[in-house]
Length: 230
Image 1 (tube, rainbow, N blue to C red):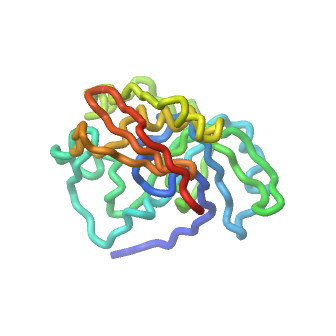
Image 2: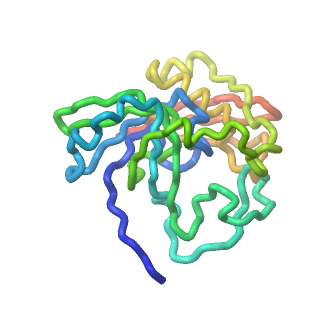
Image 3: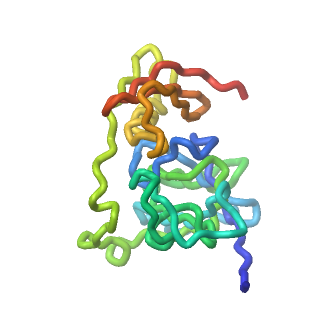
């Protein structure tokens, strides 16, 4: 089988140390903040000249936790309950012949840092902390936006937003700039589609905290918050 080499140009710094809880698509949780840090070889400010003229950028990256030698022609999209099989190329499943992800994120700006050179600050990324990035391209509205497009099985999917009850004494333990993002992430129901037990306590690691919650009907309730030790 013919293969090609891909160079890692950057890695993302995000609030998700594990896959669980990451939004299933980019842009769903705009309150999330992440930083793109370039590898030493690519810390050249000239490579970013003009990027601030764009409001959004594309990230091409690797599902680094889903790399495998074999592949399957069909997968089970979580939003279909995990029981319906569709062709892998008709989904955005990470389990692909090449574990490549594509995300459109909002560019908040650039910053010149003494340690990492120029970095990019973005909103709405759906990437785990440390995810390798292969390329960055500007989002071009006239070519990339298709308002008339059909969304396949996602068009018929119900709204999965949950009502979130995050008690104030617990919420206030989070840094102020992380609180809304935590609520928004939880509202998108991070549970696997095949797990819907109201008596079960789930946990999501986010921004240095372990957030414990349960879900009954359409209500998610945070019941415990623990700060993780470095």
